[in-house]
Image (cartoon, rainbow, N blue to C red):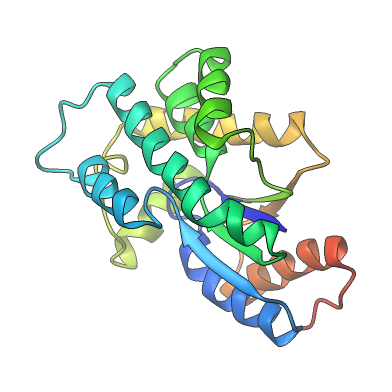
Length: 210
């Protein structure tokens, strides 16, 4: 099963995934965690280019899109597809929906064009389940600063940009309710973790232990 976690910056995806993976392993599943951009040697090099907030502020949105897609294509073919074919549960911190939210809704790039590019980059491989950690944009950015998270080039965009991204996520989730489950990210860590477990357990038919 291929599971992705999506959400605005500061929603807590990255800190939740390791705990979620440990819980799934305790239930007897083979689990692999990864992230975007990155997850491979090539992808990690692309990540450095994409997120450098000092050197690459002039990056055009089309350049940004193609770099994200390059990292994703490598991750799919080198990691995600082979593991999924083996029956491993894959937990991925961001995936194709991030491109629609950030570059589509955020930058205003045509969504049809983006979806065509995503089909090419992923070879048509999309998640079985997407968990959206949703919270107010200001709360997320303040949490990110407070917790000393990696403050990157995308974080530094305007508040209006981040609002468009969040609204984009909500629209994507509403359009595909069979794949998306929205989680209230404005809760304690343990409350969010339990909500994530309940969402996954509903698909795997296992108890969502606390």
